[in-house]
Length: 193
Image 1 (cartoon, rainbow, N blue to C red):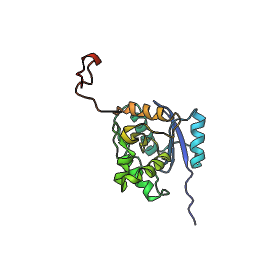
Image 2 (cartoon, rainbow, N blue to C red):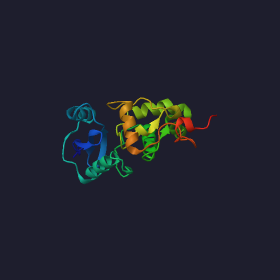
Image 3 (cartoon, rainbow, N blue to C red):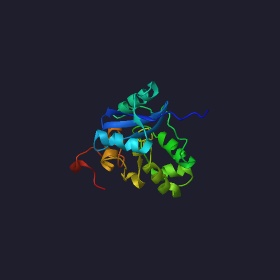
Image 4 (cartoon, rainbow, N blue to C red):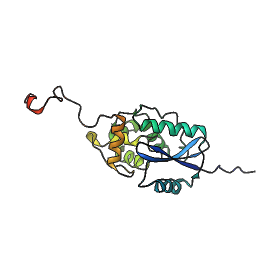
């Protein structure tokens, strides 16, 4: 007798960004979605990607939803415990997603730095393309990966770069140049170079 794979299910849940969605099969997350322009659009996008139907999440998925919600309220929550189904991904993509998951909340890196970890800076564009197709946004925190020199580059979620920036601000990430010794002084009081 051939066992059939269980039906993929999904659930929408409120966060500080709006209604996010999570899809699962058993205790494995198969996809997540940041808020779309409306609650039905968010569900539709995830259904189209996964074939999931609305369902009641098991305890492991409820824990994942609670942790995502906490992270999006500014808590320094580690999502490393959430099991994601990466079985259908190509090995390089799975490696990129694993490396991206290691970036702690409130910290950022660049596509080039991440590519260097994957084998060389020449892979930066490929890394960016893979993160642009991220099936697990928030769990795989692609919003923490910046362009060269820390530039906010494109972001495929609804709202684009504004959503990326909002997520980084919620996490307390330092964006832009590090402060200087006199950075907090009024302009008139700063020493001249």
